[in-house]
Image (tube, rainbow over all chains, first blue to last red):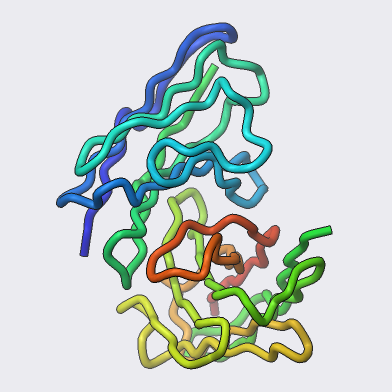
Length: 107
Length: 121
């Protein structure tokens, strides 16, 4: 099973700041990596797939990069609605699909 | 409008059973693989089960294998999860989700709001 590790667990930032979230895979997943945003009481929303491709309707301030085992989600110029939990997911080797433990983006 | 809506959650005693359903609308349900993902209170996301669009294959997380069964009715656009021998560790919000593409390995691009299952005596 591929283990996904996200860091930091909590990132405290201010509106207008740039946020950088990291995700590491225990072995290479090529670019088969997705990022999701989840707000309290809501379902996850797909933000990024194939490590760097924005899903439909996702603002350009969200960008993804990386391949192999190291990945980054960058949110430029944070908006108030961006404060949420973020999860990475590998879909290269499954079952099982595996998620990181999440990063809380905190004001 | 693309939509998934889960139902069937509730409180069940340890050792009991529960069946969850997920109603799909707004897209050709029979052409998409479907997933169940769960989230224990205050915890992260855990993949539970997958069923191929044509029901030809199913996969399960080790934590539920032999206890949970995923199935679907394409004519009724419904996904289901039969959960048996429930334990307190199965307490979670259960989400159904749609495969983004029909491929071996895909992210999930459409999610329902979830239904809460609580296993407690």
